[in-house]
Length: 276
Image (cartoon, rainbow, N blue to C red):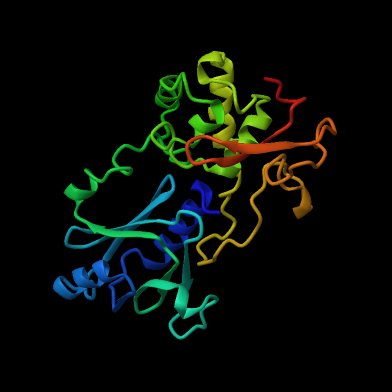
């Protein structure tokens, strides 16, 4: 599922392929996007920048036009050479942005909107984002203050709140809590300063490890598995997520799981390594 690392890698690839290029083709299955193109065409505009912001992505075009997208659970961006066969069905296509050299195709993207710089600054959910976990300018002190400002939230639920820190999703919340030996259901108010700092530092370490760039200047799509354990075997790539009733990789105790928080997302933890 797309989390901050997935969006970061996608934006990096699109930036390499498209930045500075002129749009030669635009197609959208979303009427509200097509109307903007009909009124103020994208063709002829220059793609100035593609960037990740936590789980959001922005694609900036000349003339103060910005495409904002969010993948939610199933969306994805692909990059192709003109005429290259798509890896997914045209039925799943939502947006095509073509240049002379590449086509960027968004499949099953559930949130896609055009904005000006002014309207983007007011966009609910985007304008309130906390420090981006993967940003070089990440503000750890602000992230710590934001986390401590949620005393009544359970630790794992607080990590999901994008206004606290941007980029952590359901996989990483369980993995980070396990690595820090923090029970995911403890209230933030019960966490020591060292535990709060450890959660933040570990989240940064895990996400950064999954966006390591070995492509050079090549235009590639990352297809590997997300890892937190550093183990080579894909079956051993995560500590607890998705491993309900399996033995803990540290102590052998069966991993537990249950729904948590306002969206009832499933959390995984080891009751022995992460006592309440």
